[in-house]
Amino acid sequence: MLKEWITANRSYRRFEESSRIAPETLLELAELARLTGSAANLQPLRFLPIHTPEGCARVFPALGWAGYLKDWEGPKPGERPAAYLLLFADRQVSQNAQLDAGLAAQSILLGAVERKLGGCMLGNVRRGELMESLGIDPERYELLLVIALGVPAERVTIEPMPADGDIRYWRDEAGGHHVPKRALEDLLLSAKEA
Image (cartoon, rainbow, N blue to C red; front, side):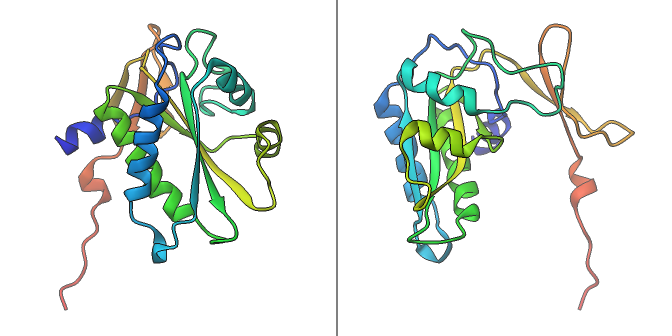
């Protein structure tokens, strides 16, 4: 079951925007992140759930989508995320919360898969612009990640790594998204026995 969820947990970038996500669902996903391990148990992460069309419209313009797809500007109206969960670090608690953010984001995205949702971690964010728009204190809080969420409106397929080693994801003529992955045997190291 876990391997199925991990395999289904792809970076979805197109959603059924009209399929709204209940605020309770976002709180359940934030709860999964809260229960996730934290470096030195400092628990510096803070979460901002956004689910209304108006709130989503404030977040979307600050996001950059799919850097390898040079001719794609991001999801069109009707394909945009139905909700977001923003991850912040409280600088009064910790100055380095990147590890916590990665762990929490994976928990959130696996929780989304369990609920038949998809998501995408976005680090390409105009942070200053977005934080000002949302009224978040940039002195105290650092915006680490934006997690876009919704019912996926695209198919994402894992492909074997091509012979030339090109890691760039791509889209086929039908709009299917393809992600090359290295083979397990290419990732395993061997060590001398002691």
